[in-house]
Image 1 (cartoon, rainbow over the protein chains, first blue to last red):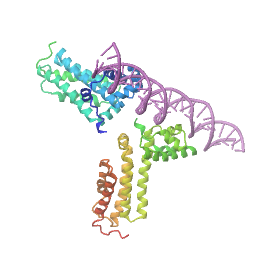
Image 2: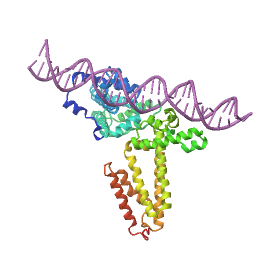
Image 3: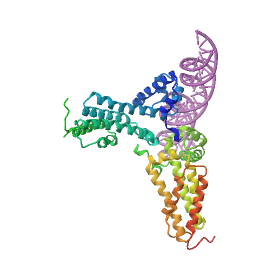
Image 4: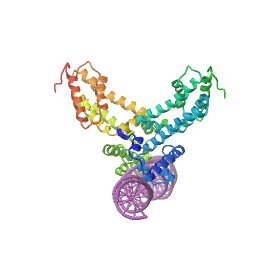
Length: 204
Length: 204
DNA sequence: ACTTAAAGCGGAGGTGCCTCCGTTTATTAC
DNA sequence: GTAATAAACGGAGGCACCTCCGCTTTAAGT
């Protein structure tokens, strides 16, 4: 029970998978991500296997339980979200990068809302998963906030944890139909506040 | 989702079941209790129906989800444990009654240990269940402790919540093979402590 | 190029979940 | 007692889970 945690990279380092196995595994994760998004976290594993064009046995070999699969999908998505921070920072003025990233953050949370119960269980059961991913997210946010503070496009008297704190309402807000719009407005509002009194407003 | 709570007695008061229905329902609860004890909380519902001599449809009509059934079984067992307090008090000197009741409490917890995870989920999901049952248990304990204090078979400077606190180690102790013996010893130890300095040691 | 062992594949099959609905049974009214 | 009717029964059937093992593919050795 204690070792239910997945040691993904450790396994990858110790034993490179055979080419076909790696192919199937990647495909499964990719398909699983879209099926979970579409049908919810309780989607049929057989459907995932079918859509991925592999047998159900193959799915179970790679991911012995549903939770294993969900965990890998979840990690991959957090990773993608955080990786976007770097790209956005490279392509946009730093305040715009921050804003766009927060917008994506809202979208990301949106897809997770329906799954709340099951995901919460997974996250409380597997605390490594929680600390890994939340650490990763706040790191990405810090990078963006610090860059924007540094070049003066947002005010200097705030830091990443202030912003994270401000965003926390996005989590806790009830799951109403207006949630998404409300959250978008929250991001705009927050950005206006951050830009106000900045030493050097965006010149773009 | 909010009304997942079962209104057992309310339903019973508003609509007496047809005789055969009541019979089947009782039989199902009884059988379920022993199957859960034997095979764990994930036991097959079809097996329960089979052993109870009813169709699976009947089981589902009475208990639309596994949780409903588990809840009723659980409540019934707590009820039985607490009802035993009164009987023990009537048949034994009050310190002996207390000791015996705690012994049964240990046995009761023992059967729940294996189910810990699922039960914990049920208890945290359904907080009414938790408060009802824990209230009931501490009430039973209070009755026994107060009687024993009153007639001087245990010391007077403790109350029920002290004893409950002392028993709490039984819950939290890890699930080792020695758990049961250790818990029995805890009860004995506790009783010795309670009897020490009592005004009027048991005369039986 | 060929062999071979290890790695991986896949789906049949056994089991459990849950729903649906035609049949049976208890109860009420006469 | 009998008829009418509402309540309850039960199990077939459809779907999903997961295991097991005979077959296929890869890749390492020659």
